[in-house]
Figure 1 (cartoon, one colour):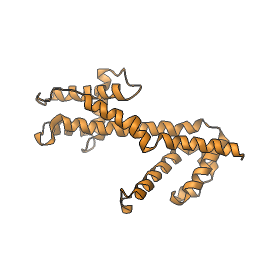
Figure 2 (tube, rainbow, N blue to C red; figure 1 turned 90 degrees about the vertical axis):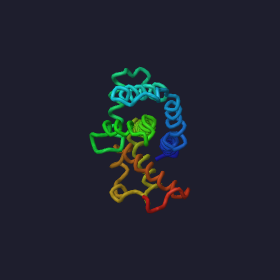
Figure 3 (cartoon, rainbow, N blue to C red; figure 1 turned 45 degrees about the vertical axis):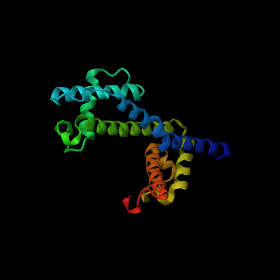
Figure 4 (cartoon, rainbow, N blue to C red; figure 1 turned 30 degrees about the vertical axis):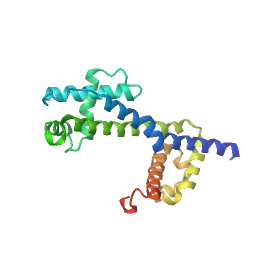
Amino acid sequence: MTNSERKRAEAVIEEVFEKTSEEYLHLRIDEPIEKAAASFEFDRTAPVTHQTFTQVTRDFVRHVYRKALWGWQKMSAGEALDEAVEILERGYPAAPGQGYDTAFVDASNPNLNGLEYILTQMARHITLMARARHIRWVSSRIELSDWPTRCLIAEILLQRWEPFLPENLRTCSPAQLANHLPELINVVLSIDRTVSKMLEGNSDFWDF
């Protein structure tokens, strides 16, 4: 291993950490979605019927994706409705397969601020999905590196994070992990965020 090879591997790791940092994610994902959601307009005085619920949630998804998520500018109304249903089914607090129906019932509840509450929950889930998609994309780019570089990246990650890694990872060799770097990166990123929160005093140790 030459010094230049190690520097190249470290540069790849630093890029991954930079583009998955909380600051980066907040600036590139959270803020655009928050702004798009805040700029969405709908008739707040209209009764919440199945028709208005479907239209508003569909139009909200289409608006947010067009304004905040690159690559989704040409989403059709049908695609937006399918996505809205999927978001509510997966991301709205309810029994499995009942998220959409539960959201409709809650939208009709005057104590929950109607549709505004539902759209807030949808925006939150869109943000979580966008973050996860971005992290997967950044991590997967490591796979484009050649075999020696991937082995070196795995070696560096094991050296840096060994005290915090699960035993099944600590006992692996770099060569064994070289083809599973996105998964290893995700583990390391999760540990890094946990440690950062602990050092900042934002969370109690036993919460983890």
